[in-house]
Length: 114
Length: 112
Image (cartoon, rainbow over all chains, first blue to last red; front, side, top):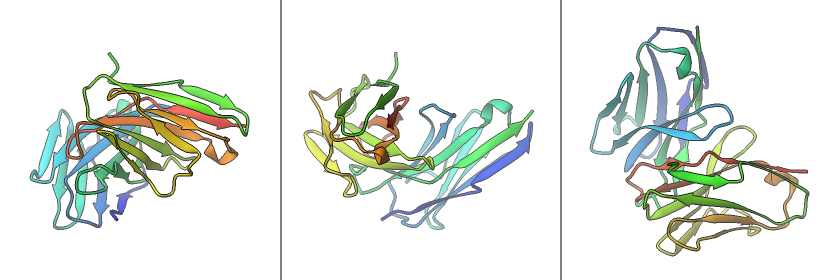
């Protein structure tokens, strides 16, 4: 069964810095990985989806990479802003077809200081 | 239009009661899910439902049961509520396991 670890658990940085959030997984036979953000008291917002055949995806100031061989994914946030403050979660389908849903990491709680 | 919507957003109820949470998706997806987020904010799959096939996480008590009246809806029924059921419950949908998943805004259930 897939195990997902996110490091760091919490991060606080000044506005404007570039930062990297890490996600590691134990089973390299993944179909895809997805990065979400969750604002306090809110639902999950999908940020990026990387298929297993891809190495990275970009959306605006966000760039996610995937290295299956090392069991790692990173989410790079450029020029961070206070509005980026949220909990960031990575997740993977739990089985070949994804029928078992996603396995989530415990998230990185990010605070961007104005 | 909200892609995945669930109601109610908040639910406070007494122990022993039976309650339901509704979920609807307008994305035309084939698979819907229910997740539970506990007090430590950890998200865990409870059920997935696809083409009348239900997959149940083995840790889910049988007091919990999903009901799908049609492809766009997957409601969650909970019988004999217990204090430990207090959590935030999220509905989600995706076309299949290789596709992007979309989540509802969550239902915060408080059992008193």
